[in-house]
Image (tube, rainbow, N blue to C red; front, side, top):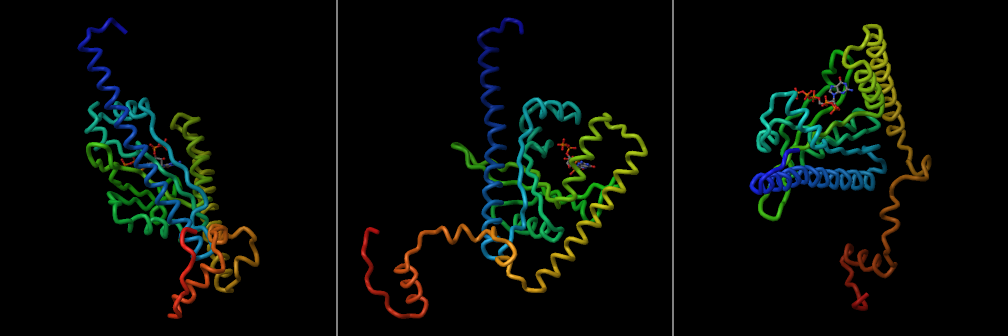
Length: 258
Ligand code: 0O2
């Protein structure tokens, strides 16, 4: 880099600070969404005895990745423009066991009061011609910074394990061939997507049968996630006090400071 004058150096320093704050706002938005997702999953699993979510991953686009996408899409290199036009800087991918769970998770997230749904793309109901299936949700969450509240966009992809398995492999193949995948491989990929789809439908059918039988998951799985509740320290004295409260029987005064 050529020698810079003091003004240019100051301008660069300011730009670096702004860029860092910009990227940090996406990290905070991702953290907020991850907290929401974990709360919903834990709440759901403690009430219904199973997890609608199998796995969650998040990623932030690097400054280099943002720059490349801006240049590729013709987006002006101004942070406000980038904020408006590049909507996958923060990305979260949620994998579920069953198709119904993908919609359930999508609904639970969309109902959050401070989450604004900007766009939904349902590639499960309308798969892409190559076989790609996934539910894409674009949301804005408010990030509370020291001097302002910034709505930040997060892209959430929700899909089943089978759809995710397929998409990961297809993504690798696509990049390996630099976008021009041989036609025979495309046919094989589409066939694999159909197999994954049949597996999803069959697994859901079996799951519904198990649910209809009313089998207590505790009988078939020792690791049902009620651990959280059973780990809460709760003495019999406390439980008794709650029981009395519920039945209207007055509770004797308890020792304070416990
Ligand atoms: P990467 O490397 O995963 O980030 P739009 O402008 O909104 O109409 P866009 O931006 O392509 O179209 O959005 P879309 O269709 O919602 O896709 C966004 C992301 O979904 C992609 O991000 C992929 O992660 C995933 N995706 C979409 N189509 C496919 C597909 O055919 N195969 C696989 N494996 N993934 C897909 P990026 O930035 O393209 O890629």
